[in-house]
Length: 124
Image (cartoon, rainbow, N blue to C red; front, side):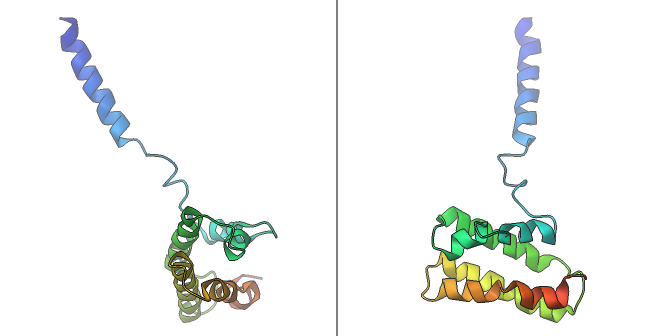
């Protein structure tokens, strides 16, 4: 008799565990522009780690994933074409860093020029 109640309970628990979010993958995804910009802040920032060639492959992939999400967001101000051009440059440079292409880090440094983006897209 006991096995008739335990088995369904165990199956239900297994379904609930399987449906639960796995790891921090969803928590790691940016939801807003400020989440991506947080990677750029400070001299010991996540971005400086990547551009200083002190990052792991997983960290490089995280940066790319954040930039890919950024490219899907709407700019707070300014023209969408400008936003697309700038975010496309970020994505392309981050991909080249992962592919270890020559000059990729320099491209990433150029693409992450804060002033160039903030002048046209950051609200005053």
